[in-house]
Image (cartoon, rainbow, N blue to C red; front, top):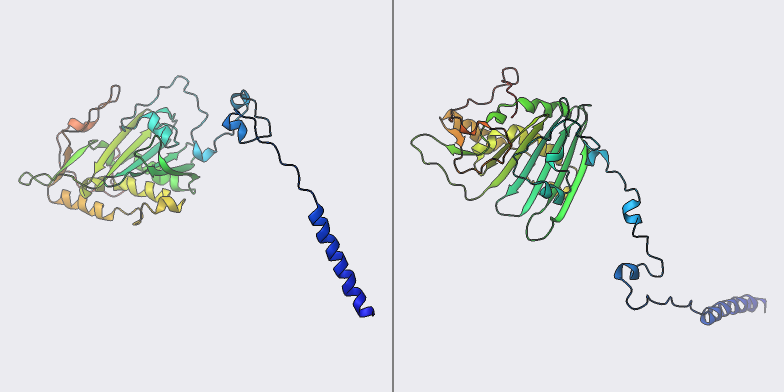
Length: 314
């Protein structure tokens, strides 16, 4: 008899719990928003909408240092640096970057910026390297589809500080001979050879900004022309790779321009030159004249660090 008592008690407890669940009343449903309620208020109903004035008056979070390495500076008595990169300030805002035209530099600071625009796709990338006077260096990378929408579609981005020691490598590029070259060039293989016509490839827009002046270069399609600026392209893109796999997939071969370097050396060794492009766009008003009108002369392959000349960037 005792063996039957425990099962009967357990059955009674379970039946009571089940009956309690059946008899439990559901909580009253919250009434929906009244007809005509604005969509922004209907989404948070029944909570009250925030004060519209608070949207403008409340403090906003400050951008992290890596996202705006030169932030918080005042112009004072200095003048903004004219930039002839062909990128308008409004375009920078679409990419989530402070316009290069608004940057204020002091001392030995510099900004190195690279735009990569393939001819067969609207997938573009922007890399900006900033070196501050305190010896710290930062990289900002952006990628997205620059076509057919009001903004940059599928835009991704990252902002990071570079490891210690990389600032010196970028500062060494300030006096590289590439900055004395014409902004836009055409490859001439020699007096008896016809010049090539570019129908496919990638455009690289490179800008160096230092206190008081900026210099922009554009190289497209031809490996020899791209090889002339490979000394700056490689470290800039290498610094950007590794922060976001979605950015890295755009550069499956990494940041190597070894083939372009070899093509440029081969061009120079066989008497070829990179001469100013007569069909290049005109500079905007206020930009200091660049050596685009200087007669093209063959340039020897780049010397080593010990014998490298040091002209000022323009």
